[in-house]
Image (cartoon, rainbow, N blue to C red; front, side, top):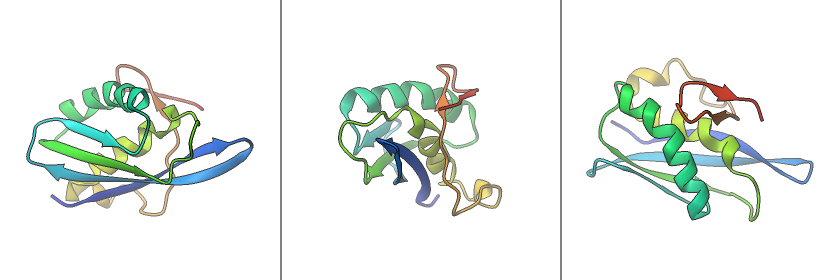
Length: 116
């Protein structure tokens, strides 16, 4: 497995800001998310875990969100976090554009994307 990178975007007022999300395989079995407020990280974790658990990607992951401004909504980063984790598996890299920006909130089941 390799490091997976995806880009998301958040709104600061009316201006979009691109945020980098990096996922690295870890030795543990869980997913840790840093670089966003603790409550937001827990919510993203709850929405992303069902998809990761049911996918072909196994193991634990350390996810780092870089460049997130203070006091912004983070739900729209769910999809970028998921894509970064999926990119750690080499088979997914060829299906997902490297330069794309992913914006979307996952439903609690993790299997539907809500528009933001």
